[in-house]
Image (cartoon, rainbow, N blue to C red; front, top):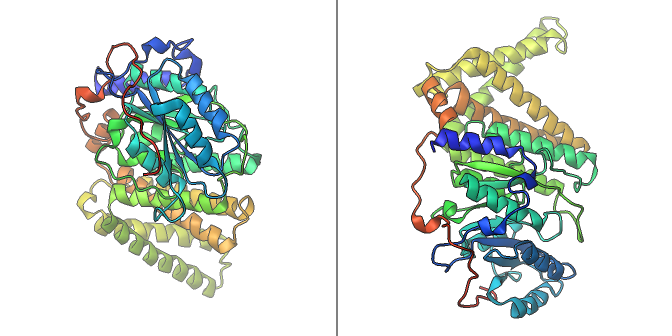
Length: 441
């Protein structure tokens, strides 16, 4: 099957209800590694102070994967309760099916949820890795559907989506959180419009599954706790699909979603954008933007000095002339190697769209997030600037040939060869046997 046909098939199945992938899911179709030495899936679960709920949750995951060769890797950062003791007792019962990695305070330099997930991924032996939270909001019962989607469609990445038909974000508290979640998802898709990420409805989902070989040799450097975007962008995943699920109410504990975490998501987005497009060109783009601020302000003050009301038509004229100034400099300096491709009307549309996004983020952070106006404004400007740069670099100043390649092969390159050792076989599911891994490491 060609790369284009394979992605089109995945896109067609993307909107189907989860149960329709194999209704009901036939676990005998989930195949393991050829020699049975590796589990089919490693489920990575970061925990922190979840002693009251982790025991039933672990058993719920194992029940959902009954008949599937699997291992659970729990990376625990607890230091105020007995979560690790509960986990070690469970490990005595479950043996090699449960791996416990405890990271006490001071054991690692950056002890965050993101780095906990990376630790679990590096310890995983499965053909596939599934990442999920232990607070009950991600349903373990959806994992078999994700595995079937990965195997039948040969997908590199299967995301759990709250926003596909059949999915729900009911577990998000309040209208403001739902709006912010939708808004961040949209900004992320726009920022990576020239990559396969643009097709993912829930790119910041905390519930996802991917082929373990996808991150071999890839340095994952998450900022905050939205690790799915880190995997998507840095691994250059080609074939993506999603399975709808219901984001449930939290079983216990407090939400990780705070204003600080929201700002970390925006920071992470900008870091990944710079990684994907290059720091030198972005620095030139930023300097051109600063000169545009001077042009805008100078024209506005000049028209006001001439006796016009600056807050009527002059403010729009000043903005448009500043955009024209920026377009000219960016075409002949920032993207001078591609200046024959830049189109004025498309540049103007990109600048307008980025401005709208920046304003909406500022308003959301200042109202729903109760951030100080200066902080909300800076965050909005930063995201708008990063988004504008991404669209200019990947669309406005991209050649028609390059855009054509991106449409047929999202990353503009041929599929990476995979070794037979990383592909599941048609052998029956085998239970993993051998050594028991345990304890802090």
